[in-house]
Length: 471
Ligand code: ADP
Image (tube, rainbow, N blue to C red; front, side, top):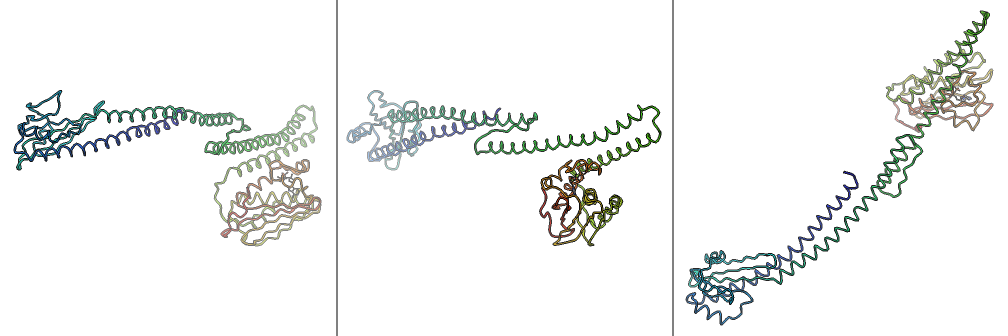
C-alpha cells in the first residue's frame, strides 16, 4: 500500500470514528432524556392511581369505575385496572376495550408481586412506555394499575435529529475524503520528487539537487540529501583527480623506460658503455617508480587507516634517525642540518606517522634549499604541547601557493620537484598524519629567504586533547 493511500485512509478512519460518535451520542442522550421524563411522569401517575384505589374496599368494576370517573384526568394514557385474578375491571379505551378479560401481561404479574414496574422501548416510529403499580388494600395486593402510552411525536423528533445528523455527517465525510486525498497527493508529490532526485543521484548525476520548498520534515530530508550529494560530488572529484594525477605520474617514468629499452633493442652494435648507461637510467626510473608507489600507498593508507594503536613515541629519536638518513643528500649541496632537540618530547602516535612527517619536512627543507644553505630543526615542549619546527634558508614558497602545497600532487616548481625526485605527495602525507595525531600545522615562507613549518602535538599523558584539530 502506498504512503498516499495510508495517509488518506488514516485521515478517513479518524474522521469516520468521530462522525459515528457524533451521530450516536446526541441521539442516545436525547433518547435517555425522553425515557427518564416518561418514567418520572408515568410512574407518578401509576402510583397516584394505585394510592387512590387502595382506599377502596375492594377492586371491583363498579367501585373502580366510580373512582375513575371522579378523577377524570387520564394524562393521555391508556389505563387498565385489574383485580387480583388479573382480570381487567377497568379500561379507558373505547376501540380495544379489554374489560372482563384476563390480562397476562408480564408487567401486571410483577406488579401483583408488590413491585412498581416501568418499561420503555423505542420502536420504529413510536416510543412505547408501560408502567404498573400494585393496589394494596389492607396490606394485601388486591389488583394493579397498568398505564400504556405510544408516543409518535417524540419518536418523530428523535428520528429528525438522527436524520439531520446523518446528513451533516455525509457532507463532512465527502469533504474530509476530498481534503485527505488532496493533502496526501500534495505530500506524495513532494516525496516522489525527492525519490526521483535520489534515483538521479544514484545513477551518478551528483550535480542534481532536490528542489523541495517548505520547512517540514520532507524539506529537511531534501536539504540533508543535497548536502550529502555535495559531499559525494566533492569526494568523487577528489577521487577522479587523484586517479588521473597518479596515472600521469606513473606514465612519465614508464615512458622513459620504454624509450630507453627500445633504444637498446633497436640500435644495432650499440657500444657496451652506452648500453650500460641506458640500463642505469632504466634503474633510476625504476627507483623513482618505486618511491612513487610507496608514497601512493602511504597517502591512501593514511586516508583510510584510523584504527592503528597509538603509543608514546619519542620525537627526538625519530628526528635524529631522519637527520641521519638525509645527511648524505644534504652534503651534496653542502647543506647543514642543525638539530636543537629537547628530551622527553613524547606524543601518542604511530611511529610510522611521526617518521613520515619528520622525514618529508626535513627532506623538503633540503630539496628546496640553496647550495651552502641551512636547515634548523627545533623540538621542545610548551604548555603541554610538543612543538616541532623545521626552518630552512631555501627558495621559499610564493604566497599564492602557500594554501595549496598540502594538496596531493601540488608542486610549485614542477621541474625542480621532479629533478629532486619529488611527486607532490610528501606534504599531503604529512597533513594526513598530522590530522591523525590531533596536531596542528602552520606554514610561514618568504620567497628567496626560506620556509618555516611549525607543528604542535598534544604531549603524551597531557591534559590537552584534540587542541585545534585540523579538518
Ligand atoms: P614534492 O614531492 O614535490 O616535494 P611535497 O608535497 O612535499 O611534494 O611539496 C609540495 C610542493 O611544495 C613542492 O613541490 C615544493 O614546490 C613546495 N615546497 C615544499 N616544501 C618546501 C620548502 N621547504 N621550501 C620551498 N618549497 C617547498
